[in-house]
Length: 280
Image (cartoon, rainbow, N blue to C red; front, side):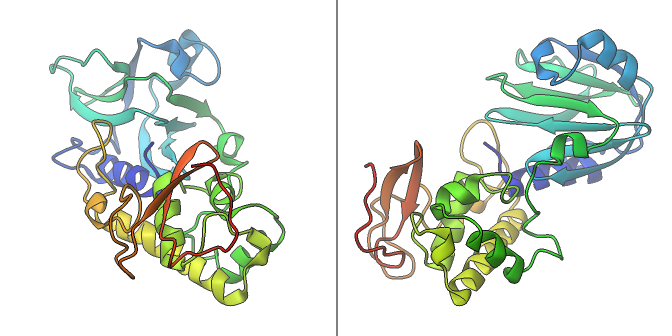
């Protein structure tokens, strides 16, 4: 699933225009919508959705957590890509892929196509984006998100770090990849209890999360499979997907465990936790 850096990259490319994702959608008017998979719509039916969105113009494209947020002339369109979603702009004359399930026709003769092989993606059209994003935790890269704030959040919980950081209501945007990378940067075991961290460890985790995200954004995210391509972060992974390969810090072999039914990668030397027990 695309995480914050990948979603940020997609939002930026749709906003600014790029050779890979097509021309910018900002300033374009939505003239029609094709819904091959009506279940993409999180609320309401296709007829009401079309009636409400057609004629609205796209004023801006941003991101909140893992949502791509389109600021429309009256409403807000939010798209969550989930496991296999991809957005791109193409000429209306270009044949659609079998998996281009939701297509927004634009006034300049192009289409913004939501390709979603597994059909897990979701499309929201709301008057207030807080209706969708309200439950999300803070943005890790926001100016007002500080190490002190993170420390207070961690101390208020009594959960293992990895599952807690994956909880979007705790902190928005982290997924399996960047959580593993951030914990390695912070030298913290994924099973370490959140309320046990010292101020120095909180500071390391804060810096690790932000550094992993910033580097991911610089490299346009990570290209891992057919779902998301064009990024280079996969070439700089420290632990994710590197089971039995040497840790870049101490050369100990990276270990992979199962935690909450998610693969988790860490260095048993740099991220030690005596007495830890987990499913392998």
